[in-house]
Image (tube, rainbow, N blue to C red):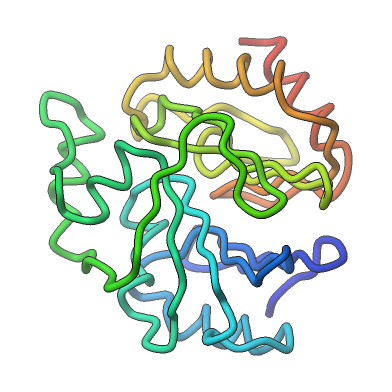
Length: 223
């Protein structure tokens, strides 16, 4: 069941991964689960009183099997996808994940299970605005990883830059990150630049509904 985190913000707990629905200037989906989550996402959206066909925007924090998988499976989805340059190129099939790195190798293996969505893809750069959200380039987990923060909605979506476990915020770990040193740098950098916000949504774990900025600051101080 969709969980409301704040006015106009819902959390979808999928197959070990999260997605979010946001009532911004247009209805916005943040990340899209695995290829096996399409039916659940559709049901969760309907539980909020909306339909898949109403979504006009998808904010993609990064390219991974469990964050883009359902995009090609949601038949009624007709939205523009926004993603960081390096990850957008993989999503569209213009580039392949980088070899010589454990992350890229895993993405190559998982790639055949992820269809290429028949949707327009727009590249976002650091500092770009999309609706009420500002995009922050936060590489490390993937080269094009992007965090989206809305001062208006007092909410930030951090994808797999950070994880939640036992009520604590932790950085993306070595096993599934492109470069953990860059993860740490991105955490410090984004903490210095984002406005105050309450809701902190991550790709894995239970989102925080208050003091998101303070939790991020505590994590950044430890990096």
